[in-house]
Structure formats: structure tokens, C-alpha cells
Image (tube, rainbow, N blue to C red; front, side, top):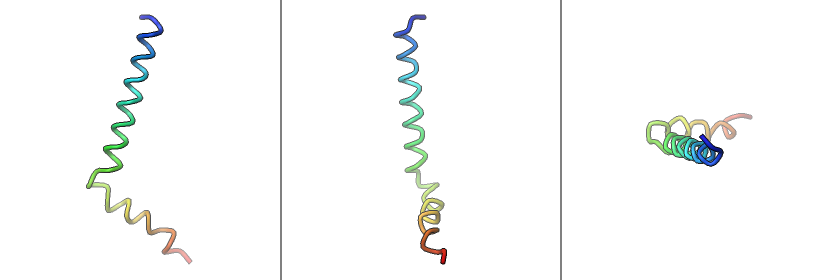
Length: 45
């Protein structure tokens, strides 16, 4: 395995991780929790 193959593998793994985080952040299942967390600064005195 040469360095170019390793670079390709790391790039693909990073891209896959990025897409996974993006899907998680924009999923409807997490929207209620994110909306609640967004209101926390306004609820404190």
C-alpha cells in the first residue's frame, strides 16, 4: 500500500464522516432537541 492509496482512503473516510454528521444534524428526529437547545440562552436570567 503506497502513500497515494492511504491519502485516498483518509479522504474518503473524512468525506463519509462529514456526510454522516450532516445527515445527523439535519434529521427530523433531532430537530426538537436542537430547537430546545437553541432557546436555552433566552431562558436564563
